[in-house]
Each structure stands twice: as C-alpha cells, then as structure tokens.
Image (cartoon, rainbow, N blue to C red; front, side, top):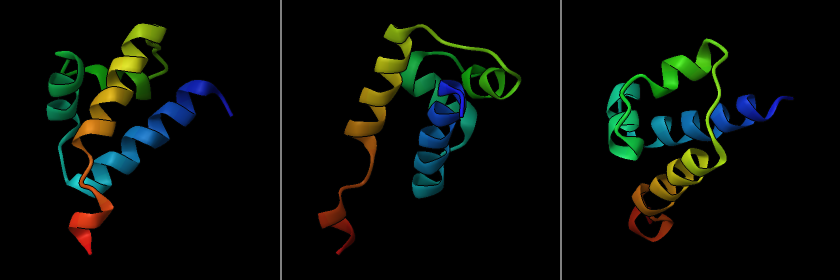
Amino acid sequence: MRETQKFLQEIDAFLSLTGMAETTFGRKAVNDGKLVPRLREGGSVTLDKAAQVRDFIRVSAPSQAACS
C-alpha cells in the first residue's frame, strides 16, 4: 500500500470519529480546504505538511477517557 493511501486512512479514521468535513479538516489542519480531495486524486504532501496533519489529528481527536 502506498504511503499516501495509509495517510488517507489515518485522515478518514479521524473524519469518521469526529464527523468533521474534509474541507474543514484541511483548513483547520494546514489551512488547505482542498487537501483531502487532492490526496484522493493522487496528489501528495511534503513530510512537513504530513507531520502538521498528524499533529492536528493527535491534539484534536477525542480522548478515549472522554468517551468512557
């Protein structure tokens, strides 16, 4: 599996968990509302941008303790 596909799976899991729209996610994570659609169309991101996205997911995902 390509790294972009793995990256999209991480994003999709976050979107499913939070109910956030793709465009909102892109804007909040890296100020790019077209990030996710562009990745789905075969685009890529820099390592720095991927790190920013993962940091956003890490700090924005609901904690497991809050769900209990």
